[in-house]
Length: 380
Image 1 (cartoon, rainbow, N blue to C red):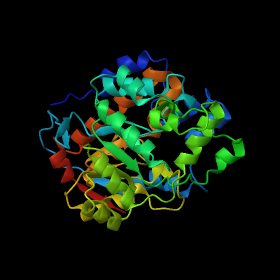
Image 2: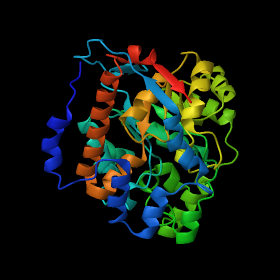
Image 3: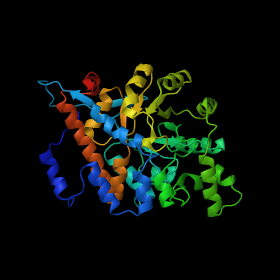
Image 4: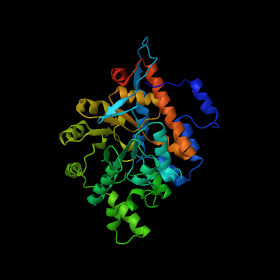
């Protein structure tokens, strides 16, 4: 059972933070004040005209919780079991790369904050720090590895092997990034964190990648990373190969169509993350929260269905879980917390999410995730 902090109990922490930002808009503004235009624009912006970015957020308002009252909600169990492991709550850290553009401590700070609040940490392929550095900083914590497929598939297999050896619990293959989306803000600012070397942590520490280089100068490293990230030939055959090279569960991140969800099950995939990459890849696609119910229906409880994109507060988490998500991943909010206040900033964001989620569940009249999945959510 978990405890719930009231606003009164949280005030002690808030008073000591020198008016640290509380909600998403405040976090973004605090981060903007500390970041240069290039990094700020890269984190904030999305693809095209940002239609999908705004739909991700606005679509949550179309779903309304219908609470049940006069239930004893004095105790709350938020535990969730995925792949045989029980986690204390259904909140995960989304894979977000190049964290050093937000703060010099980057993914080390985020993973430490995640460990403190028991958020399983999904590490990006394009992290500023390596798998081994994250493992050394947070020994024993729950970690998954998000894989960007490489044109040289042996690099992919090498990184997966390293994650497995480091004790990571699952592999998350992102499938909506076979090439980078059209991001006008980055074009305007002429800014690419990959080309500036912020995403090379896992590459420069990988023996297969380093052996593939014509030389080990910085330009050769960066050019090869950019070249390998571009992989438009990615297909189900590659995933079949990946399954043969690891014993870890494999999830596919980026599924939006129910037929792709059914295919994933047919191909032996262990889980799905419903995501449109926070609107950063293809503009004009369906909001992730609108895609979730049809995918949950198609999967029919055969494999876990996690959710990503557009989560801004605890009530959003409750809505996604009530619509069938097994767990929910948090992205941009923790990045703004990192930019605004380093590890302490991330910790405040995660604590706020955790407590607001608990309060929202209890005020909905539910005491555990099974009851939450039976909560009525209406659209309109």
